[in-house]
Length: 169
Image (tube, rainbow, N blue to C red):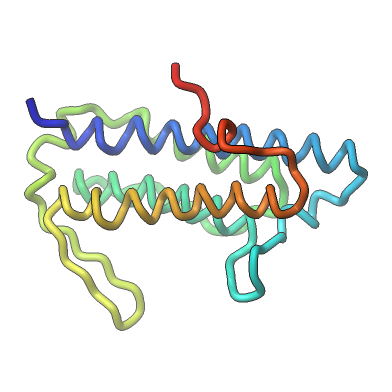
């Protein structure tokens, strides 16, 4: 039996977003314990030309909700990238999860064949829905989840592989 587009996307995105929320909790506890300003973590980067922690979380949110929007033809909610605190990042994660929880498996029926075009500046890519999820959306989603984890680890937050993998329930 084939794996459904729903199973390949919605639960995976929700799980990853919950991992991010748990990483933020650990980061905040670390900052309090070590008396580090939260802004230091909020704005931390792995390299000068990479996005900061806050933007990594924004990209995870955008990737997940926009993927579902593209696959279903339903307008995904738009969240301006204006978060300034950990609480606001958590709120964005919660709003993204709330949107994803409205999606039913039937909403994604036949979306594997839907033509999806993604444009970044002058670059444009067109995929069948299944290729879009497997070759673009999921790798992009996990790149930003991983980068969030790595930024925190680089900043001394005690996170490891089990924190990245999250709970299996």
